[in-house]
Length: 115
Length: 112
Image 1 (cartoon, rainbow over the protein chains, first blue to last red):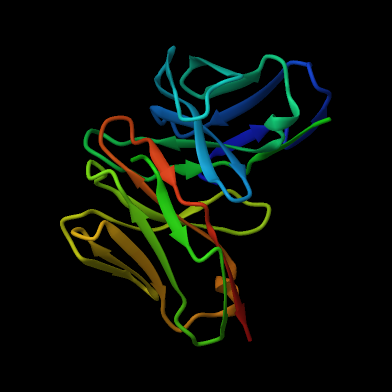
Image 2 (cartoon, rainbow over the protein chains, first blue to last red):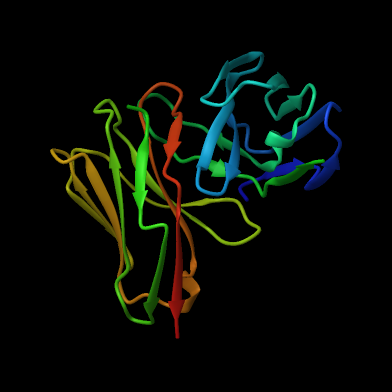
């Protein structure tokens, strides 16, 4: 998985509780992404980062926040988890030097269940 | 305009067959079209990718066909094997921050 770890790998939580997922990379790649994967929807981009402290929203960012204080770590926070946020969350990294479309490498995923 | 539509949802072929998965997009600004392969319990992994300046790209048994005028692209798997059984996702992206829009996925089963 290209030097990408995600923690925790599985989590069960209750509605209304805060949850933080961590993505750690050892590749020193500049770009990091959080996606969620749901049946029938493929993968949808939640937030992404293009450098330390530089982040922006993706297509399904409501209810999520992110932080990136170091190159290697990208945190995804659900401030108050809802059942609709039950999903599998994937982190990805990329290191393209200009232009479009360098490879995104995905982590192993975190399976989150919100009861 | 940001959608990528993928079909079929699922596909069953016999070993040696040639499964074909199709994708269509609307946004002509897209300039990068990768295919990802995902096995159960794993993250997606890049299989092959194409840019709109070519109409076909082959890597081993995997071929992408690209039709820019029709805004469609497809994945062909030659001489399919049971080990190719996985979920396949097409995606589209464009310059800048390399944000990808994914199709809904196709679950492929290759029977021995």
